[in-house]
Image 1 (tube, rainbow, N blue to C red):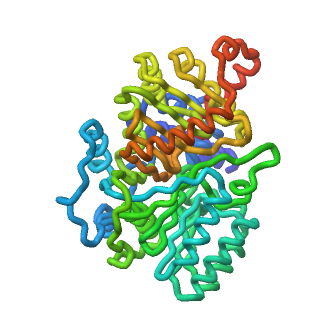
Image 2: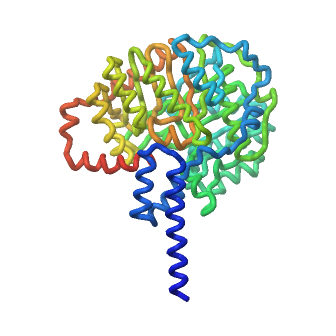
Length: 470
C-alpha cells in the first residue's frame, strides 16, 4: 500500500509538471520567457512549480472588470467627443495608440503642480482634504501605520464624520506589514476600505505577482494627486543615509476625470459595486493650454499600453530623452530603442540612485548599463539620497510622469498610472527639475565604469537573471 501511494504521488507530481510545461508552451509567450520556465520545471521541478504558481501564471487573458462595466464607470457625463483637444501632429499616432488600447481620452487645459519632496506634497494633500465636501477617493500601494499614515488617517476620519464619503483602496501585498486594526479604525468611522487583489493562500497565489502600484487621490472630482509617493514617513523624512527624492503632482481641471475613472474602475473590480454619476465628474475649468492623457496600465488584457507608448516615444524622439527612474530593468525592446536613439544622435540621459533601497535590484539594474553606455547613453547617479522619482522628458514638448518605473514589473505585472503631457511650458518646468537633480549627481565615466571589479560584474549578471521578478 505505501508503495502504491508513492507511485500515485509521483504520477500526480509528474502530471502537474508536464501540465504546467504544456500550459507555458501553449501561452505563446516570448521564447526568452518560455525557455527559462521550461528549464526550471524540468531540472528543479519542486522549485519550479512553487515559483510558477506565485510568479509565472499568465493572467493577461483574464478580466477583473468587464468591458461593459469599465465603459459605464469611465464614461464622463457630458463628454463630447467632438470637443476633444487637437493633439500635436507629431504625437497623433501616440495619442491614438492610447485611445485605441485603453480608451485614454485627451484632456485640455488642466493645471499640474509638481512636488519634489514628501512634506510639501502631504501638506497640499491635507489642505485639499480639509476642503472636501462630497467625496474623497484614495488609492495607494503602501499605506504605513506610522506618523504620516496615522495623521492622514485622522484627517480622513474627521471628514467622514462631517458626512464626506471616503473610499480607500490599498494593495494587499504593499501593505502586508500593516495590522488590520489600522484600517479597522477607519472602517469604524464609516470609511469604506478595501484591499486590492486580496491574497488568499493557496487559492489565489497567482495574484501575488500582480500588484496595484498606483497612487491616486481624487477629491470632489475637482482636484487629484498622482505620482511616485506612497504614504510613509520615509517619503517625508528620508532615510538614515539620505533624503528620499521623489516626484508627485496635484492635478486640477478636466484631466482629474482620468484619475477618477481609473479609481472607480478599480473600485468596481474590487467591491463589485459601481459608482458613477455627474457628482463624480463635475464640469471643470480650463487653467492652461496643455493637453494630457491619463493612462492606466495593467497586466490583464491584451495590451501593455505604457510599454507600447514609451517604446513609441523612444523610437520617435528627435532631440533628447531624459529619464529619472529608481530601477532600470528594461525589456529587450526598450533597451534596443534607447540604444538606437543614442546611436542616432539623440541626447539620452539616464539618472539612477547612487544607492538603491534594494541591493538586489540595484545590482540587476547596473547589469543593463554596459550596453546603453556603449551606445552613448549618459548615465548619472543621484548622490544625496534615494532617487525614487519617475520622470521622462522627450524633446521640448512631451513629458511622461506617474507611478511606473522603468522595469519589467511596472510595464508587465503591476497596475500603474501615468500621464502623457503635451505642453512646452510643463516640459520646461520639469526640465528645470531634472537639471537641478542632475547637478547633484555623480556622472559615469565609461572608461572607469568598464574597469569595475569582476566580482561586482558577476554579481550584477547573476541578479539580472531575476530581473522579470524584481
